[in-house]
Length: 280
Ligand SMILES: Cc1ncc(COP(=O)(O)O)c(C=O)c1O
Image (cartoon, rainbow, N blue to C red; front, side):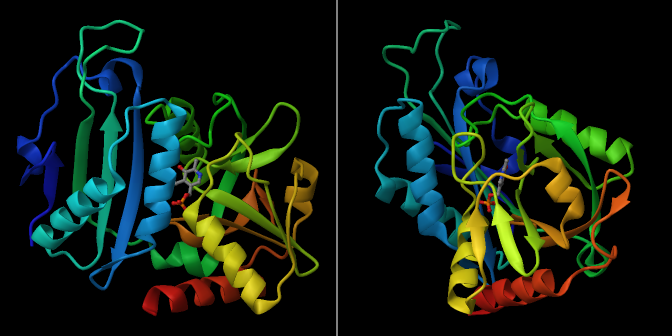
């Protein structure tokens, strides 16, 4: 059950995988990515991840790569590794070419995957909730495209850690609360959920979509609407959502408790419902 890499059709040990120095992902951040996880030997919501990858590639005008080819490559790598609880990082760059901003005429897409075991988040984060800080959103205007250009996310996460928090929440200069550095964000007020609408300013999270679906099935009220920092601080409950994040309660923001500072009932319920889907 080895952790493995895949590079343009070949599966190999991760330490053997290397890309040329003129890969455009490396030179320009000209690459898109996905991250898919498995539970109990089954890839979770693979098709929506493939949809999003197609959206990202089309948005950057990459030449088409058949979906079937991508799916088969992922499934082959997953079968070969035979790790029940795996995370597969998938990165596709525009290819390798002498450094020039313009698209190369004849480069071929570079298709890289890294499959590793998932290390679960500490149980205490889920039981007691995590702390977050807010930071100004300095990202570019197309956060709906999952590109490897993640420097603002990297800097914000580090700033959070150095402040003794778990993560950072991006807040636009115009006041809208967007999302975490690698997760979407929900607030709950008077039993109703609110999350940022799907625009070019946030990533359309697969977990976000699943949570909206769970809420619909459970008859919980959800609004996809803008909210500001005052609403964030005044929320009864706050949680982040993401593939490894799952449903993660946020109980302190900028050193202020959210609600009574404990994990709230709606967050607990949604976490349970998500685990049910994972189990099923
Ligand atoms: C900026 C950002 N928002 C949201 C998410 C959550 O997306 P998903 O639920 O598909 O993992 C991620 C995941 O990587 C992310 O990087």
